[in-house]
Amino acid sequence: MKTGDALRRSNDYGLDLVEVSPTAKPPLCKIMDYGKYKYDQEKKKKEQKKHQVQTKLKEVKFRVNVGDHDYDTKMRNLRKFIEHGDRVKISLMFRGRENAHRELGLEVLQRVIKDTADITTVDQAPRLQGRFVAAILVPKKIAK
Image 1 (spheres, rainbow, N blue to C red):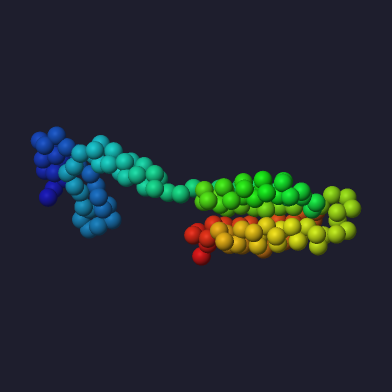
Image 2: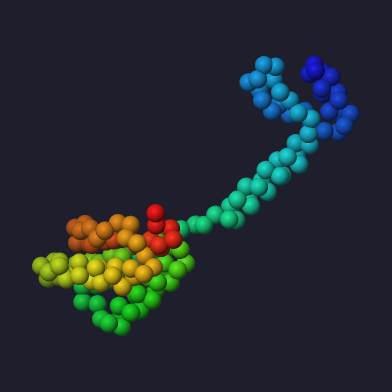
């Protein structure tokens, strides 16, 4: 159909003439309510966003000589983050003389990993980065 005829017909219906496929020979056009089409597209985008899960990276900091009560509190927070579906970075910083006994810091992180093995998987193994040792844990259902 010629462009002029298509425009007249779309005006008769009170709708818009929308070019669907400009690269086709001849170009493909549709008569539709373009405002309603745009509205439906936005609605679909919002619906898709609603079902998306945003995972955040939370951090729990430990010390080499962490007390039992502090350890339990930090573990409780770590479990809460994991159950919420977030990734958790466990980090440990060495200060002063603690640098001479880095194996103690690695033991603390290994203890955390062992205590949370039922709900987490290690995404990044404990790694020494200067004065810090860090590891990343992810919930088991997300880990693949």
